Length: 109
Image (cartoon, rainbow, N blue to C red; front, side):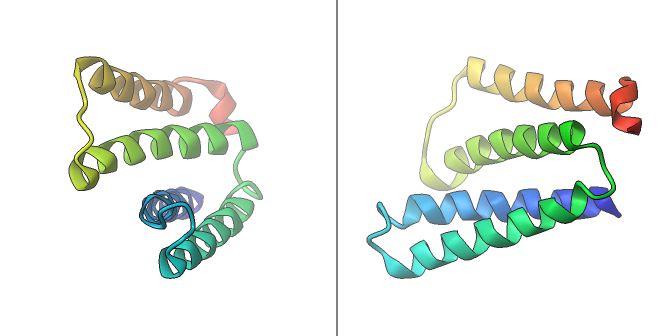
């Protein structure tokens, strides 16, 4: 269950980052409010995840997924261009997450 919550929290954090961008420096109140609510919900979910999952593993998946997700979202929805190195970096982040959770004993607690 903690993996589902971690994915949900990460997705909400990515939404928060998108709304932060759309808030135009917190000058658009609706997007600013959405940013605050989403970050609050995402951190609450993370607080529940770390009750049953090691903090280092949870945070590395959270951060790595957030970096990859926000980078891809920026390209798809905000027209930011990605080069080969950006895709390589995303791939390395995802590979690191797989290694950490699939091969490392750190994931077991």
